Image (cartoon, rainbow, N blue to C red):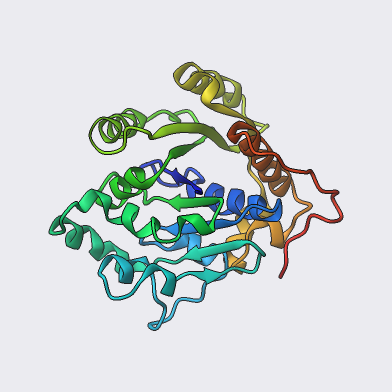
Length: 269
């Protein structure tokens, strides 16, 4: 049975989608079978692995609306072992439709139950809000990863997210755990980084991953080419950071893996 990990932070622009896509990509390159579920109507995770959205593209919205089965919408990415359930702006309408559904908080959980055994990990990219799409994602998940930007107001709004997580644990998903916090967009030129890091560590303790994700031009460019950093520029600082995060994530998950040589670790285009 695979593990379902939700990437959540209602504050936009913190590297949530970037972390979901690139961690998933490197886990796949390390031999894990990974499925990305794009639950953000912006569909950035879908674009980030090269999904070309057309009117004919079947998405998670079509599954939620019971127009088709989840197996019908899974697409292969340009990386072996990495699949995706895409999203488009149509998914915004699901918030309204879910309100009228029976067991509305568990719709996504029931959808994923059909395919979870085919994967080692399902990575859910949540929308930057705390509506029903995020509630569904957290109800389906075994754990949550919270990306936080290395900036002065890093913890702003996190109280609301933590309250939502506590409510979901209490009422809907007692087994939900916080896997960790990823510090993103680290700028070594900023004197605030150490201060922010200490503040986040006081709040989350040992849940904070040791790997920090730097600000990196190649990392920012990759999504516009429909690629993860693993296929766009595996030698970049951004790629090195996400590979390190993948190792740390697997270590925390208690999963054995073999570190490949740098020459053998490269994504397929």
